[in-house]
Structure formats: C-alpha cells, structure tokens
Amino acid sequence: MTGREWFTAAELADLSLPTLPGTERNIRARATREGWQHRERQGRGGGREFHISSLPSAAKAKLVMASAPASAPAGGPTKAQMSRTDAWRWYDGLPDKKKNTAEWRLSVLNAVLALYQHGVSKDVAVMQAARQHGVSASSIYNWFKLTDGVERADWLPALAP
Image 1 (cartoon, rainbow, N blue to C red):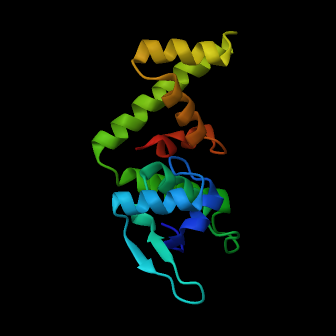
Image 2 (image 1 turned 90 degrees about the vertical axis):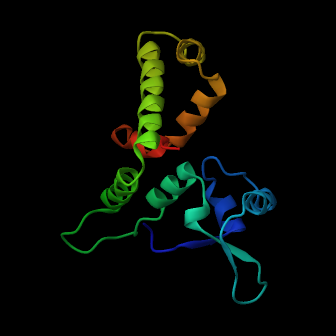
C-alpha cells in the first residue's frame, strides 16, 4: 500500500482526508468511538498512532495516492503511476458490493457532469441527479470532494466506500 502504516491524529488532520474530521481532537474522538487499531507512539510526547487499515475506505484510498514515493528509480514508474497502481490494486481487492457502489457513484457524477456540459448550472445539475438517483445533494458534493486532485480515469477507486 504505502511505505507507512501508522499515522498520528495530527498527521491525518493535516492531510485533510475525505470522510475524516478536520481536527486532531475530532479524529481522536472518532478513532475511540469506532475502535481504530492503534499503538502508543514512541518518543517524546507519546500519544497514539493509528493503523491505515482502520481508516475509512475513501480516506485510505486518498492516503495511498498521496503517499506514493516522491521519485521512482530510472526507467521505473512515475509518482503518479505508482499511486494510481496502488489505488487500483487496492480497488481490485475490494468485494463486488463495494465495487458496485463505486460504479453507481461514478454514474451519478457522470450524470451531473453531462447536465453541466449541456449548460445546466452545477447546483441545478446536482439537484436533478440527486432527485433522479434517490440520493442527497450533499452526498454528491461529498463524492466530488473525494475526486479532487484525482484524474477522471482514476475516480472509481476514489469513490469506493
């Protein structure tokens, strides 16, 4: 997956990962509430580090894509290709139910984009797609956030639950 497997609440908050709270305190509270796997941090200050496997799927996918090595060996894949490869490898290992959910979310976003390309404002397009697919507009906006900074061809892993 990534070179690192353990992250502090502060590191997770700084990364602004999708589906995670934006503050260190709220991440710690959620981790406690959901029983995330953790270990005591070594060194000055102590605290806890949380294992990547405990994170929600969308946050994990974004973390995998953001944590690719900064440089690859000569002739090897680039950073973008490495993160894409890791994301798709992770996606390929998901159960069919989660893949189907990601595909459905992608179809909803494609419907919004099709309306938008035909001159409908984004807000109206989101509302129409929400009504048509029986989902809330806020969910659609959240799915768009999951795809921020991700090439459109790689949206499927980013949208997996």
